[in-house]
Image 1: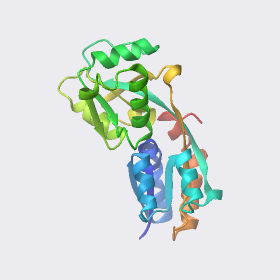
Image 2 (image 1 turned 90 degrees about the vertical axis):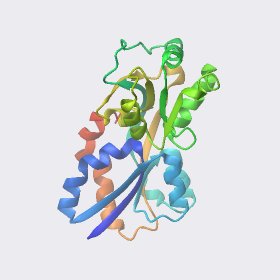
Image 3 (image 1 turned 180 degrees about the horizontal axis):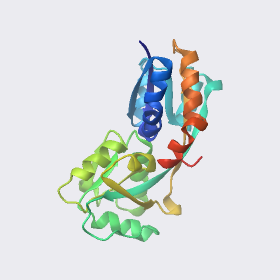
Image 4 (image 1 turned 120 degrees about the horizontal axis):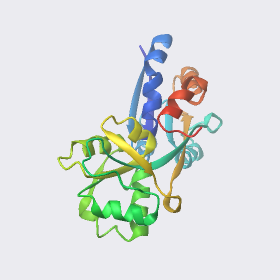
Length: 234
């Protein structure tokens, strides 16, 4: 059976998985998707990992086009993904306001642990480290950081913490596909992050025609409601 391999940031997992079964049935193929930190996925492409489609932040897809790994003319946007704050659904404390910088500082300081995706290679994780530095909390709260390869894993692990008053943050699309956590809001404007997630077809793909068919669905009307429902701004 023909296989399409996708290397993607976690922010697009819900989109791919949402259309996967129907696409595989109609095209008699298998989608093999790997979803993790965008930097890690970019590195796999550079290392020669077989891949038909990449879905990463626009900046990284553009880099891969410049290096010749992605066909420049194939690059298209799935939409903008905001970054948000989440708590376990089982939280016993009241849900705090996160409208201001001071609110964010307080919720981070009061949490027994803080759950994020990789703070060196993931879009959201890198940004949250910047936020910590902006707030002057990067060293103060370092012992509370709990980091995982992607946001969905971080959210799952947060939901398993025996202290349900923990707090976490990642892309809203990863929060919204995690059944045991609740999105409580976006980062305030002063420290907000809105990321344009784009796909590109890999130059090395042996299945460019089928990859293009899949790409058209991922950025088109057939996936529009899925993208909107999990947090994409389209």
